[in-house]
Amino acid sequence: MTVALAGRTPATFEIKSANLPLVALLLKSADLHALAGELQARFGDIPEFFDHDPLVIDLAPLPGDAAVDFAALVQLLRRHRVMPVAVRGGSQDQQQAARAAGLARAEGVAEARPPAPARPPAPTRARAEPAPARAEPDAGAPTGALIVDKPLRSGQQVYARGRDLVVMSMVNPGAEVIADGSIHVYAPLRGKAIAGARGNTEARIVTLCLEPELLSIAGVYRTSDTALPAEVLGKPTQVRLEGGVEGRLVMEALEIAPSSSRRRA
Image 1 (cartoon, helix red, strand yellow):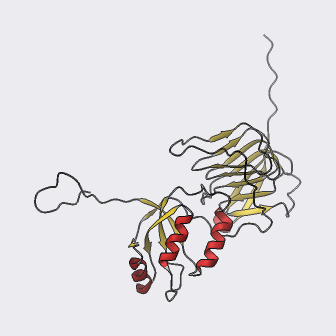
Image 2 (cartoon, one colour):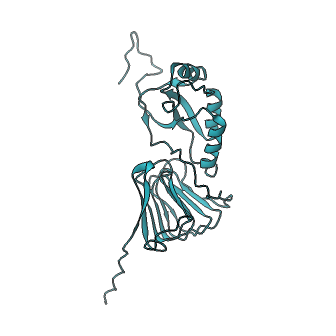
């Protein structure tokens, strides 16, 4: 809807209302030291997770008397390639402090996607070694799945930003595959698989041979410390999330029909 102003319409600009999708950070603590540690633990291995996304800080989970250093919070978030532009919720004092740090007040803005879950990473999850080569989508554009044809060795990491990931070869122990959407591995999955990395609870993990070190969908995870059921271990399996981010991972064996014999010419 165009905003009509009295007088002559300017030739050099036009002002319109806009409803922009934003990433939302639900701030649950004013302890920025603890927040920095948890952000590093979750995103330190995948610095490309954000791409200078605009972000709104949601103060609703925060106690109204909590004092937040918004200037320091903005700097912390920018180090992880997100751009805080506004806050919503919170007490009057918190809103004033946010405004003093240059943040606008935003109520009712649309979120681009569910916020990354605050659930901590598995304590047994080992940090991936720097990968000699990393496959990832180009900035900008593709909406189809990212396809990887080569086996992934220990220490390698692939992140399919904003889409599904298809791996045609083995994911070896120590390798890590991450996708904002679903992950399909048409070979043994023996490393770590993290689907729905930005909170997509509908994401799935599908593999022809399930032997993972870690499975995660939308922040709900299961490590190799918990033995897999015999009916799915080493077999074609689909993993899905039941009950949302407070739910559980469900593993279902897949029935792979044998290929039909070729007809004689």
